[in-house]
Length: 115
Image 1: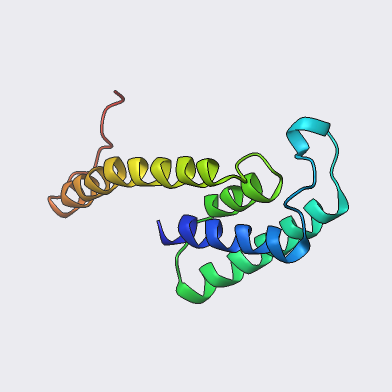
Image 2: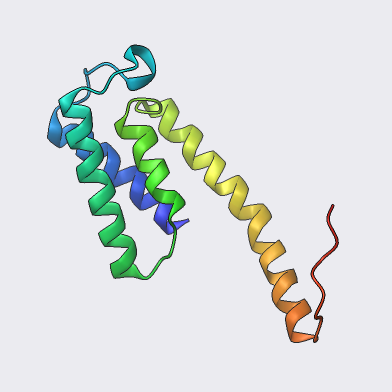
């Protein structure tokens, strides 16, 4: 979760710093404006560096940063949509991860059967 929320903040800051707020989104033009490229590069590098520094291995957070900097989820509603999605995944993933840890601690060798 930390990786995604830091990516969200860093991506919004990168869009602001690079002046990409009003640049057309990649989805609309099917092309990449220079300011969107700069914002994306800055956000990805900053997110990766922060994840390494905090030791939060979250490669998918780079996708979160790109969704924002490329203009797909740049609005306040888009940021809220991402935050809600991350929280939903966390609410489902944390209990499932603990179930897997408990199974390993109990000596279970076989994986869980497919759903």
